Length: 596
Image 1 (cartoon, rainbow, N blue to C red):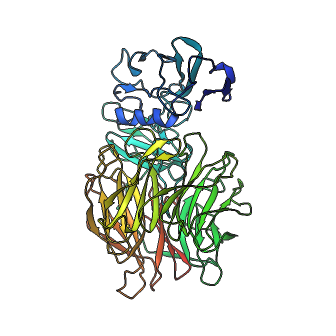
Image 2 (spheres, one colour; image 1 turned 90 degrees about the vertical axis):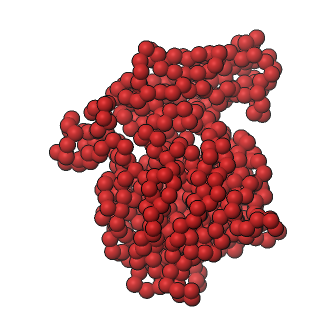
Image 3 (cartoon, helix red, strand yellow; image 1 turned 30 degrees about the vertical axis):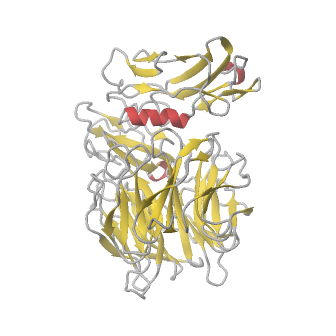
């Protein structure tokens, strides 16, 4: 459980009221740092996070600010209560370090909640506090050797969108390798405890031996991803799922009915109607129940899932391109959804993402706006916490924005945005992605463009070269390639490197497909059958781990031209390997390719 408390106008905001926070004079009221900024510091200073059996680099906790986000203009005293004996805090430098030990103690310890406080030196009534756990980052109740840094690096895409709430998204690291993993598509962490700190082999099936003897044995050597089972990285022949969905476009995968199996949701643009969202409930074996559809606005394009009202259930939001609205569908715990509520948007909203952009603990929505008098912008819709949203705040980007991803590119604990720009950012640039560095509280610096291939339609984010910094990949719809831009960790990026894929790549997803611990890329090829033919393939680029990729492998998704668009990677049969789901625009169907 993590909470942030602050003083405002003499009253305390927070569940523990005056137990943890008080208010007083001595200048503007102090405000505690966010959980995201604390976790970002863990990521930056220690490659593994606070993992049992690992060393711990010095961690400098973020300073408190005052109301409005500025640094206090008076002296502040810092303290931490509840620390274990093996950690020490230096109040003068705000540094947290190991004490009397050379590595974090082994697994099985109870979660250790601590309270980080800042107090005006001249006025003890002016203080703020942040409660967090120092050794149980996955909130599992004990240290288990598989500590997630929940929410540290949010990842949300155009078609493939991942919720940012701590129980959905995790950044998992082994050594210097980082993995962006939605927790609802991974294997359970129960029993995954290191058996030998010297070589980090592990007893992943909990049978007290490093072997294959358990009924669910998944024994994986050090340096690999324990949540992606070893595989060839090859996909089997496709299985087609036909339905009444009309021209599916955007697509996501999540466990909507909370049964432990992944489901699929599509946004259907429609040929003669459509204008719907379809839910395909997964059976846990790679098959799905018949679709259930819900009406949304006209020409829905992108879809995202997040808990928008704080009830622990996933909700949906969809951009409607021709009705210039956003439809929000509040979820029920059984996988059904309430009737849509529409919010006015800018002209031709395209991409959509969900994240706590303003830092208030409430999910916000961000869209790209593609055309018209109100277009060529990114719009922020601040969440109210009850599933409703405020009117948009716009930020200028390049011409024809399409996809967006929200992540922390400069490692400051504040969310940034990267947007694909199908047209030119300016007369002096070609087609680009543009990066907006977050300033906190929902503000962003001016967009900075980076050249990519022709007509970038979608983008994705991951640590492709395993240096601890997030990188960018774009699928360039106006060409037949993917651009990869390696991040420098300060919000800037190296020049693009291109990789050939099929014609008119329409969507992309990233994940460790072959279980080698390196991030791979898969793209759907809308036109892979010739210049005037609609495609029927996807391309897979297997990552080497240094930011480069092997030559593409291609897989058919239908025997006829299908126009594959949306693509997601998800473990549909709970075997620990990522499978592939493709939305076929012209065929109005889904194709399922199971990992072999």
